[in-house]
Image (tube, rainbow, N blue to C red; front, side, top):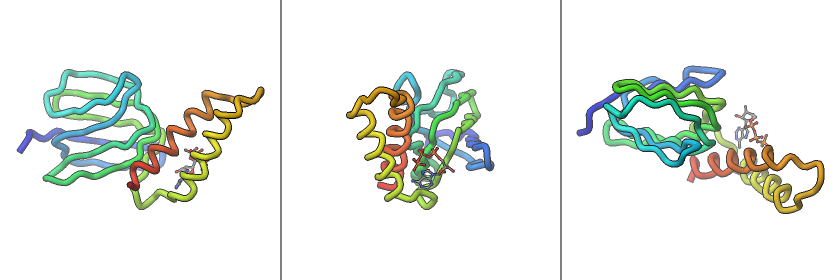
Length: 132
Ligand code: ATP
């Protein structure tokens, strides 16, 4: 079994996860990252994504809706803008948010904040993929 490291995921509302982890997967602004213990120290910005926590032969999925990750040799800290377990997610609401964001992006109407619509789309997709 792979060596373990400490994982701490903190959202503005709560300590979302605190425990051991063997492998952590997420998407940063520079692309997909997979982290084992003894990773090179790194600080990176998170995209809204499905975070996969591998521990004791299990994989836990969580929607992490942006934030920062600090990777140290034996500890990873995630400061999440928002974090949700599959059970927290209203899938119908996420599908509605996805449709709304796609319509806004397609319409390209003046006055529509494209960056905001793109961010909303990424959050909706992360939520949908966390439940899948
Ligand atoms: P929506 O347009 O549906 O509000 P959003 O991506 O704009 O989605 P956020 O700004 O990310 O929403 O979140 C606002 C609050 O609503 C947060 O507390 C978040 O946890 C909650 N929330 C948003 N979407 C969902 C969902 N699909 N299921 C459960 N809670 C959600």
